[in-house]
Image 1 (cartoon, rainbow, N blue to C red):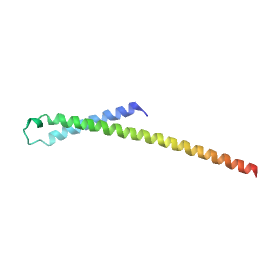
Image 2 (image 1 turned 90 degrees about the horizontal axis):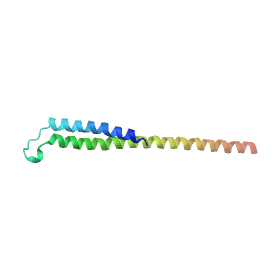
Image 3 (image 1 turned 45 degrees about the vertical axis):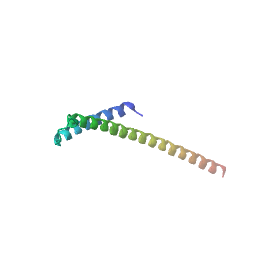
Image 4 (image 1 turned 60 degrees about the vertical axis):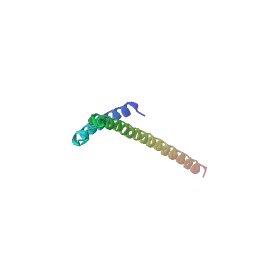
Length: 95
């Protein structure tokens, strides 16, 4: 697997998630005045960033694993075709 590509994908989606969290916090103002609700934009940005990091990294890892699986399946099909053609040649040579 390409760790640099996975890291890059995670970082980019983390920035996107943080931006979305920041925008959502400003678009939906909180009607409460409790100290717990202060700095809500920062909290949403952190949550969005972490979610983006996890989603982006996971998606890229799945894409990388699918490419590896497809390559293995192609190799298996090529091997299977080589074995079948070799046994077919032996059968026709024996006849």
